[in-house]
Image (cartoon, rainbow, N blue to C red; front, side, top):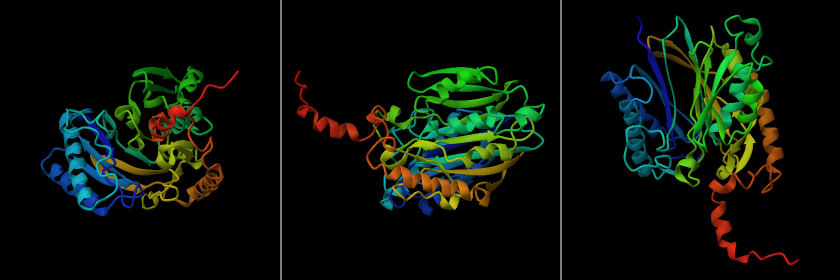
Length: 367
């Protein structure tokens, strides 16, 4: 019987080049060197290193299961080593996602974003890994709703017997530290009550009705961990496709509509999420607009065959143009909502420091 394979995607912002716009090649090379050594020593089966904006993305396959201490320690040590490289180069925000001084058994709650899944590899195992920059963990809610619950997006929900029963969603209340499960299509409206509020209720995972994992996202909210703004969450998401899961094209289709996400300039503005190839995942206009990349792999006995840069396709040109049009419109709002986040969301930005300075100047309104 074949062993289960674990796919781990762990990311962190360990230093931007220039500012928050991109990743310096020396950091990528340091991560590749260390993961290459780990593969040689049989700590992992395979790996791929990439970046989205100023985030270092580690993609690893192994047999250790999710939340494995050795795998998480490996990632943490790589982030620490890359932080040292970033400091030597005086890159911006070196080590900003490393919120702890020492590793404590698991990188969850320590700053890096994590998405992991364990499964038995199918005869053909196509996987799409999404990585985003300048946005928050709730950015995957709308795409994951469309992929696994919206028949207007995913024709297989109607015409494929393997998907006709629908899927089960695991939703996390990241402020209340609770979770709930919804079955679709029967509980679709209940699901939407919550996941439409992307700042608090986040789709953590999606499962087939038989329990097999279909998708997993990172739900770490940096501001909630740190208690203040230290950077955006810049989440990652793994989606299995084909067979009993949506087709590759159905998984990518939601990104033809650039939906509005939080996290643009200083983490304080809404903007459209632009689907781009990796080479264009270098947000610079007003530190944006927010970007998303999609890398496709085939798994072969745990080996990562790929990647294919799935958004490197002229079919997404109109989405990118629409994104620029939306960015123009939103930028014209300047400091006003709805471009700027509402006040309750600004609590975790740098704005409270300004408000504290003015606290004593507020007066009671005369009757």
